[in-house]
Figure 1 (cartoon, helix red, strand yellow):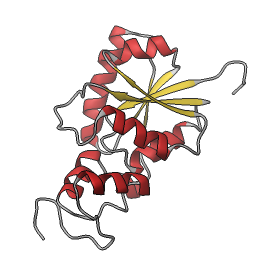
Figure 2 (cartoon, helix red, strand yellow):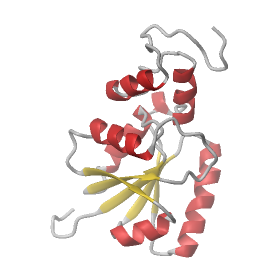
Figure 3 (cartoon, one colour):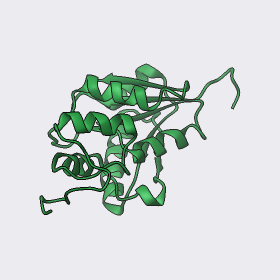
Length: 180
């Protein structure tokens, strides 16, 4: 890729919190784009109870990607296609974990392409050992006192521990659904 025409990709999401799966997708996007804009949506597309404010999520992302000058982290409001158009991005990247993700992401991509046909979507799958991982699952496990250290970076782990006012143990203390 020539430096005269830099390729910008946008990776939108809630990132509540940013997981190792998100990190994997973001860093691998840099194999096909010169720059990546990680865009935290102010409004979730699915009903979710956020654990962190948009500002806190941006701070986590900036900490996690502090070592990568080609990644910038911002927030956006409104339609993704309007944001893509304003930023002049070459494409949008989305992560796929399972077939159920594909159905939802495909529908969203098609709707966005109807509104802004110039938008291209690239779907990446995370590394196999991260394929089951979701921010919602990490939040639930952390809230119940379980060990999420294998799923998030140390800075995110620290924030999760403080948010839920517990020490998240290395050994793990709980399982999903509240069973010990």
